[in-house]
Image (cartoon, rainbow, N blue to C red; front, side, top):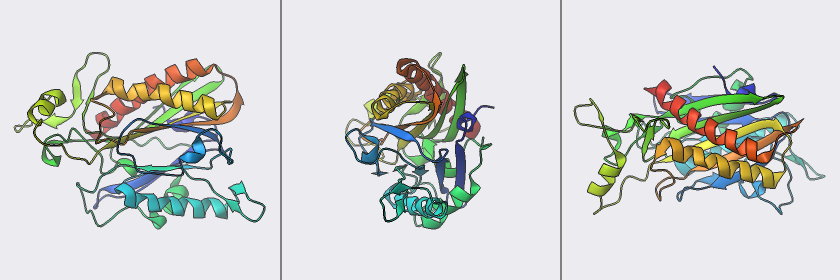
Amino acid sequence: MSSLCDVPGFRIGHCHNLAARTGCTVILPPGEATAGVDVRGSAPGTREIEVCKPVRLVPKIHAVLLSGGSAFGLDAAGGVQKYLEEQNIGYDTGIIKVPIVPAAVIFDLGVGDAAVRPDHKMGYQACLNATAHERSQGPVGAGCGATVGKFFGQNYASPGGIGTCSQKIGAVCLGVLSVVNPLGEVINPENGEILAGIKKPDRTDFIPSLTAMKSLSSHKPPTANTTLCVVASNAVFNKEECIKIAQMAQDGLARAIRPAHTMYDGDIVFALSAGAEKMDVNLAGAIACELVAESIVRAVQAAN
């Protein structure tokens, strides 16, 4: 089974509390990586994503953290920084090396114990758990409390979670990891079949999200959502090219999630470049789009 870990030098680490149904996931590049970001959802929870944009002093990042716990979960990035500082990894200020850790969160406080969220200790442990062979999918790490299809609340939602996959083109490998926790449903991009979403009361089938949306026109749906993705490659891309890859990869969310990018989702895609291989940025973005859709489908297949 393929994974983002197939990209040379990258490691994935998960840490979670199964009883509280929350956790975090760290993606560690080989030393540092050029990064770009695209925020398409309207309810993002983030930290340090400005460094992924052009015209910023800091050129590289040293990890990406994806976390449950809503804004509380951003605290786990401090644990990732502690681990990286111990490894002498970070942006050299001339005084001390400062690890740069962009982070983004999902809202999972409604499915487990809302008083338990990923913290400094959990972020640090995720780094200790990181390996180049991690292929876990479903309700692990940041996807431990993820759910899909919440227009009628958590009682009718389906499990979400982590999905990961990769593809190799010549010497270049592109990998994706996604945390799937959308307001809408996950569909098969090939035929539109609902794979996970709003369960009917008898649990035998799904209610299409658009049908639910029409019935909810008089009040807003739950706000506990968001899908997060990381695209990684061993090809050389600058920040602008990484941003373009992230933008193109966002189309993978629209292929597999219906609807995507709502006012109640905080959908974010990071694109990381760490390597010396060459690839056309348009090809990389097109492949990333396919991989994002595949990773989303894999997440719900593993969880359900």
